[in-house]
Image (cartoon, rainbow, N blue to C red; front, top):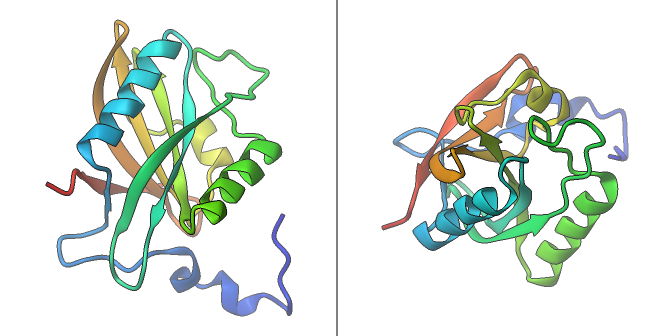
Length: 167
């Protein structure tokens, strides 16, 4: 739930919902050990989808820098092999964890078992335009490609963010 202290018109602009791009285009920095942990989480939950929070920092024109991938419970009541859902309680817990660390909730990650790391229509219906969504493909139980996406402000689709390991 979001409470706007006024009419909310100024919050509907793209600038409120999007992060400034760096010179190489939009990107999120996920250090290799954290990306490996996300892949392992996907392998552990295979053939079901895993999910978790991306916690880290972002300031000014700097890209989001993830310093923790915090696993959370997939709360979907649908087929967990094809769906993940972060419920309101889990979302609040992820924000509280970030706040307690003096960090920010940068987004979420989830796996796509035996499917490409491309967002689905279901993903789009449940995404927010101000967050990064890292998707890792898990093929035959092994973590594979990882890609990051950011929902467009008009919710018409996603823009891909480059995943940078920070090396």
